[in-house]
Length: 222
Image (cartoon, rainbow, N blue to C red; front, side, top):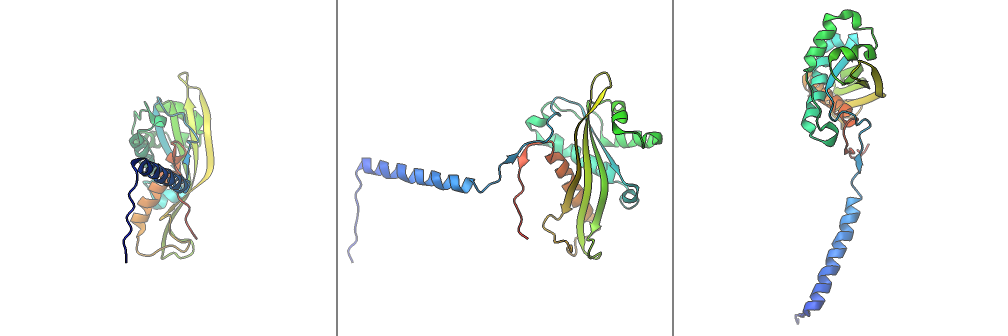
């Protein structure tokens, strides 16, 4: 069998190279379209502000998970501080979440007060207020299997220098699941502690995703 060899003129080689590159660019653009676009922050008023995080949890949740308020607040603050994005440029967190929890415990009469009344007492210009209405580490269908689920609401309270407040953002019925791939029946062998930590981190991520631009999560098949 004869072997055929093609000798390209330099100009022809250049044309071939350009055509190949353009073809690659076209392929890249098609592949690129498969990625979800970035999602903008729903609230973008944290930059240059002093920020505090306060979590309230239903009494029934606190009986089983007594540290959920502090744990979730710490996770939200940690994710925000670590983000280093335009939305958090110049943001400060002057007090640890434990100080807000202690303040509320030292002033039990404020528990029923609206957050807009409490926020000026914290000495910050933005208060991230989270209410946890539902939290569980076991599947609702199979109590021996593990699936973390939580439902929350979020409010951002802006405090002006005079102590006036404004509810700048609010969202209810925010859901978090851990593991995010777990079926409704749950999965075995994870354990309550690992499920608790994973669910708490998933909750923090859901909150922070409202405050920072982020990449859309890929759709999962059923």
